[in-house]
Length: 111
Image 1 (cartoon, rainbow, N blue to C red):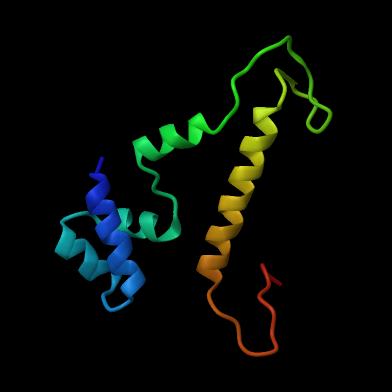
Image 2: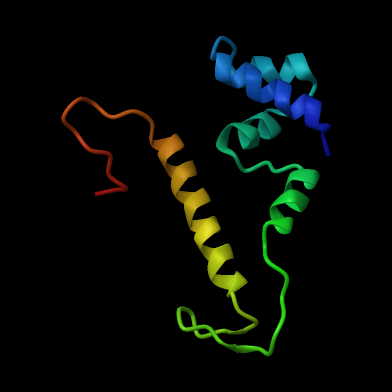
């Protein structure tokens, strides 16, 4: 686990765009995979995970069927919220990998 300050420094260096991920890894002493995970937004620090978990409302009341996914949950359905967040992260990572498009063309997911 890397320190939050180090992760913030890596994000700053990535945002500057002057150094490659390899050079950032050498400069900061972390692996290239860690730098890449931070660049793609896949690396979440534990304290930030805890902050994200605190955003969820407390569970109370009896379990019931979620009208969206059909799971037996206490409302509001955290399973639906988690799936939506995972979908959002996958789409943002896919957009980052796809890169810029040429003028007048749209990015496609495949053939």
